[in-house]
Length: 192
Image (tube, rainbow, N blue to C red; front, side, top):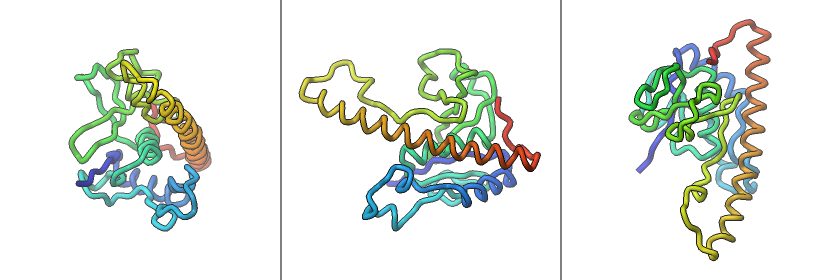
C-alpha cells in the first residue's frame, strides 16, 4: 500500500509560485544524495507535485512515499507557502505550518524560536531554514548489544552524511527563494 505526504499551501497562487520555483531549481534525491548513476532514481526523477496518490487537494504540494530528502523539501516548502494553524493539543499556540500524511495526520513544522522545550514536540522543531536532521531511530533505544553497536556507527555516519547534503540543498533553495522575492518585492513567506 502506498502513502503520500503533502503541504497545504496558503492558496493556489502560492502553490503555483512554489511549483514554478521548484521546477526551475529542485534537484532530485539521486543528485543531492549522490546515488550511483545506475540507480533507478536517475532514470525516474520524482519532483514535488500537486498530483500524488492520497490526501490531495487543490492547493497541496506533495510526494508519494517521500524519502528523508523529499520530506525535508516539504518542510522547507511549508515554511515558505504553507497554511498555518495552532496545535492546541500539543501546546503549540502560535500558528505554524504543517505536513499532512495521506490527508489524515498532521505534523507541525515548528520553528525553534516558537518551541517551548517540551519533549512532546521536539520531533517537530526546525532550524531557521526549515530543516531538521534525518531520523536517528537508534538513539531512542534503551539498550544496544555490542553486536549491533558496530552497525549503528555505520548508520550514524550515513545519517551525518545525509544531513550535510540535505541541509546544504535546503540552504541553496532558501537563498534562491529569498533573493527572488527580495528582487521582486513580493514575499509569500510570512515566517513567524
